[in-house]
Length: 115
Image 1 (cartoon, one colour):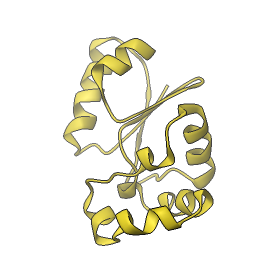
Image 2 (tube, one colour):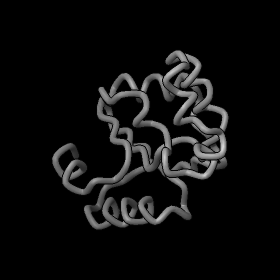
Image 3 (cartoon, helix red, strand yellow):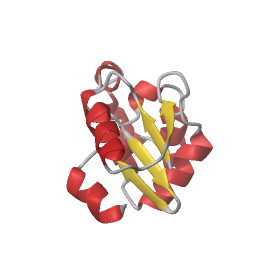
């Protein structure tokens, strides 16, 4: 399992604690220092079956500073993936990649049901 997170994020800390309490092994990846590539994001997005917008950290400062709420609807999916790959702070976290499953954000019930 790949656990992509920002170590200072409280939601990521909760998810990490949850994984450890369940005794699950994972590879930790800091989204700020090792940003996902456009190819990785495309693959995760495809596996997740979520709308691409769900991969954006809409509550983040960078999202707001860039006024992405207004810009995203006018961008193609490829442009959005490319933009996401430029800075890990644009990406919603945590992301858990386990085989064919990709979970974005931490909702305990969803993680419980899918892992």
